[in-house]
Structures are given as C-alpha cells and as structure tokens.
Amino acid sequence: MGTFTVEELKEAHRAILSLRNKSGKAADKLTENSWQKKNMVSVAAAADVALSLIDNAKSGPYARETLDKSCFALADALSRAEAVIGKFAPGTSQHTLQKNRIAALKLALTLIKREG
Image (cartoon, rainbow, N blue to C red; front, side):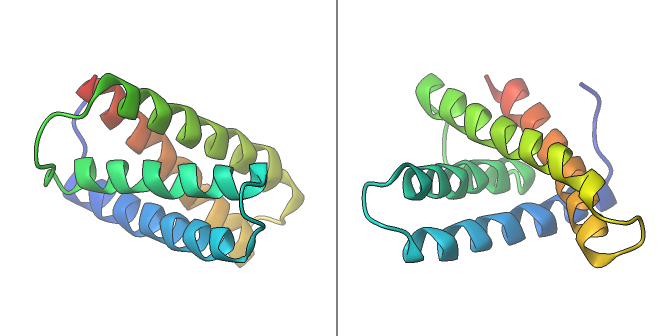
C-alpha cells in the first residue's frame, strides 16, 4: 500500500465527492426503509469517511465497525462500476466517469484498509 501523489488524491477526492453527492440525491428520492435507500445512504456515509481520509482531516480514529461498513459499501460500489464500465465505449463521458470512479474507489479502499 504505497503512497499517493497529490494529483491522485485530488482526482480521487473529486470522484468520491461526485459519488457522495449522487448517492445522497438518489437516497432522497427513494422510498424510506427500502434496501435501495439504505444502500445509497451507506455509500454516501462511506464516501464521507473516504473523503476525510483523502483530505487527512479526520477528527479522530474511526471505529472498526465504521471502517468495515465503509469498506463493504465502497467495495460494492467498485464491483458495480467494474461491471458496468464495459457497457460504455472508451472515450465517452460515461466510460471516463466509471474509469475515474474505479481508480478513486481503489484508492479510498486502500486508505480505509490502511486506517484499520
């Protein structure tokens, strides 16, 4: 688990923030207590943990349960992004979004695992 460049961290922050915002907006539109809403809320919370670690601005150590939940939610988001990227032609905005998201999620998962 090597170190990351400032540029890698900056790009990961942008992509994770985008994922966080989209997940939050999606959660707001979903039925209360549905599995979809719970999933989007989990992704948004995990993205908040990842952003904190990327920015190195966490206020204290995270509980093991928080790190485990974050790792699970982001790993699920990663597998979904990896599954869908092949549906988009290289060079399209959708393909680039997924490619950037995959790189950011891998970086975030590395930071979370390092934290634990």
